[in-house]
Image (tube, rainbow, N blue to C red; front, side, top):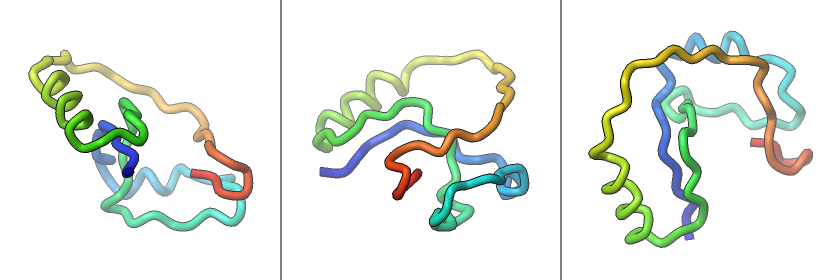
Length: 81
């Protein structure tokens, strides 16, 4: 079962320039895959993921500013994400 999430696409490849200190071995990501995860749904079936998307898609969120701190390398130390 796939892991589902809701995310915003990264605004530009320049985000990569600010990332440093990644633990080894960290696989490089394709620029088109860069995103900011807003909600992680986890391993749910397609129907449940689509219901969650349907519930959230009608909501309006006003513009906001976001300031990033240092990146956090998550997951198992030997397989960070």
